Length: 219
Figure 1 (cartoon, rainbow, N blue to C red):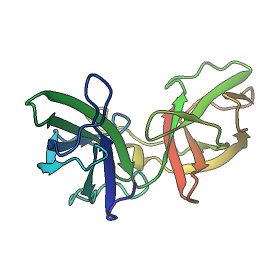
Figure 2 (cartoon, rainbow, N blue to C red):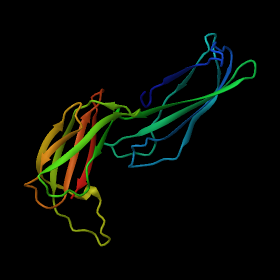
Figure 3 (cartoon, one colour):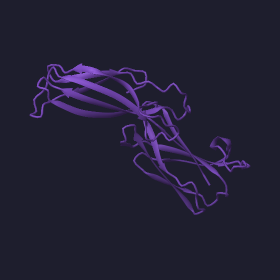
Figure 4 (tube, rainbow, N blue to C red):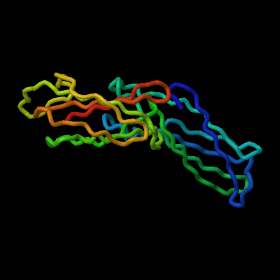
């Protein structure tokens, strides 16, 4: 499912006894909300469309929607990601009513990188980089993850002690490597690291050739 392209959602209705239900009225409502992994922005639940249709002779029905991106511009390399909910109420000719729900997600890219990297790192011999990939439906995938680690330039803190991550500039690339497909971690030697701030960049490539990236600062 892609932004800007019509998508046909299909369903099939059966009675509690197991036979198909034809010519039944189907009321539907589709809503969307920001994907749970989109920590960089949040939108309230929004209704996308609603309406009615009927089942055919085989008890099937279809609904066509075209997912659209938000009109608000997001950070380019992070992108737009939404989770959708389709709710249907079906009433057959006898007046019996059934309810059902289906969930699906749509995004600019088809992967998320899920990582576990501490914000503060003790100066031990190794740093254990833990990361894996998931598709938008929450299923783990075996994608290779590449990493780059940079030491950052020193920055004078503001009076309130806060500095945006974008202010820190890379001073030196100190490590590169990968977490191979099917693995969950890679141990990186940090015995020669200097005290200071570092940027860890994780990248992967989804099935459509899009680069998926995640950045994290640590001390």
